[in-house]
Image (cartoon, rainbow, N blue to C red):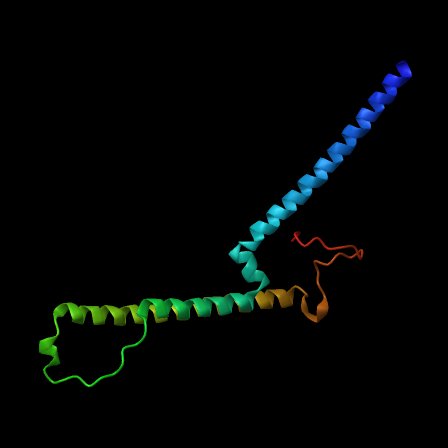
Length: 152
């Protein structure tokens, strides 16, 4: 009976060790998945990985936002000579406000494009300096094994 108890205990220990190993593997996979999801929504990381897409999206967003704020430009019409007397002060201030919003939107869009261009230029020069040109990737494993896509 002593042998049977030892065998059962050995089986229990082996099962326990196998479960611990499987749980550790599962935890690693979950951690990698969580990191991948976090990076999917990290604007800094995504801009580093896809600088031209970030520039294009910032230009498109500026264009769409300026269209939403300003709407379509009013058609040019010839106004009568006594037009200033006919319109109220509220209508004048609305036109002035639209003009100011248009100028501000242009400045914000131009600034965003300039910042994105500078960032992309700096990123590309750092990438070139670090040896990414000519197909050489310093992050690639030297032993020929698989590269972990989540490690950086």
